[in-house]
Every structure is written in C-alpha cells, then in structure tokens.
Length: 124
Image 1 (cartoon, rainbow, N blue to C red):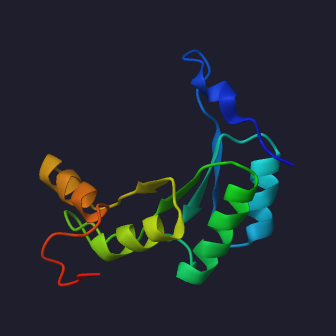
Image 2: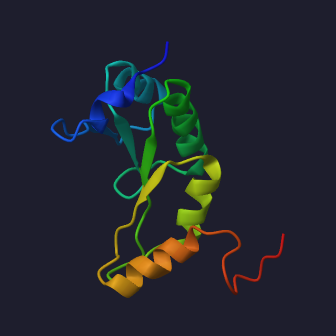
C-alpha cells in the first residue's frame, strides 16, 4: 500500500516522523505504513552503513514516505561531505548534517549535495 503524507501540508498540522536506529528495513516499513510523514535513518548513532541505509531508503520509498538520513559527523564544524553525497545518491529525500555550526558550514554542506562537487577530483 502507499502512504498519503499530504496531511503535513496543512500549516496547522506539523509533520510526524520517527527514527530508525536499528537498521531493519522492516522497522522502516512499519513506521511508513503507520502514517508517518517521514522516516529518519540514523547513521550517526547506529551501526548502519551504506548498504543498510540503501535497503531502508527503498523501504521508505516503496511506501511513498520521504527517507531522511542523519549522516555521521566528522566533528564540530566538520560536516561529512562524502557521506552527504552518498546518501543523496542512494535516494535520501533530505539529510541531517551534524557538525554544521555556522552558515558557511551549511553552505559547504549544500554544495556537497550538488553534482558535481566542485574540485572533488571526480569527473564523471
């Protein structure tokens, strides 16, 4: 089945979501099918790696619920640009960026999510 997450477009009804720190795509499916507007997948405070995140993103997408991923930070003022790009490539709808403390940190993190990343050395 698919989830109708249109209720969060009402300015008087805040969106409702939950965290999956376990890594099980079945947990993501339960959250998505229970009426959540989004599901947060936590790479920072869990043992989830990219393969597990990919399975959970697909589970959320199958239920038409946006997957939001918190990437691991590198430390204060050091967003993890490599992980930002990787989870966006996997299909994350949004990214929570620990370590971003200033406007320039946030601006750099946004640039990291753009393709191609300037001066990344990658070309194709």
